[in-house]
Image (cartoon, rainbow, N blue to C red; front, side, top):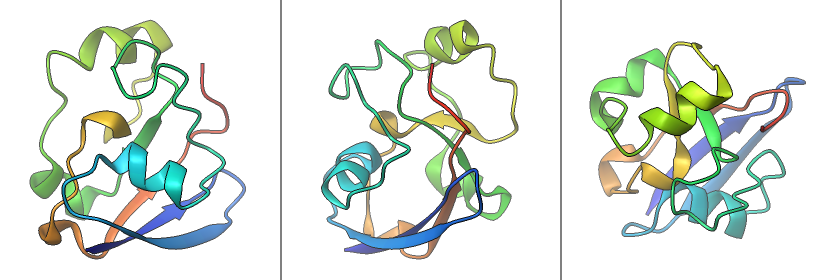
Length: 106
């Protein structure tokens, strides 16, 4: 289990528990995080689960993968730490993770 803090574009802060073994997107959806739309259900086809990983956590979550890159490029999002939350696997090492959400998904 990992506690993850989501910071909405308007500054609202919500901390939820995410089960290890699920994606960050699945945890966000289960936890009622409104800023994660996940239209494609986590297949990295839509880019509507973008988030921005806090700088202190980027080494733990890893870099953007080849699967994510086309969707991030399509969104034109060059924000540091941008990731698709469907491609971040939740592990106990992510306990305390902080992510920010864009003002809108594409």
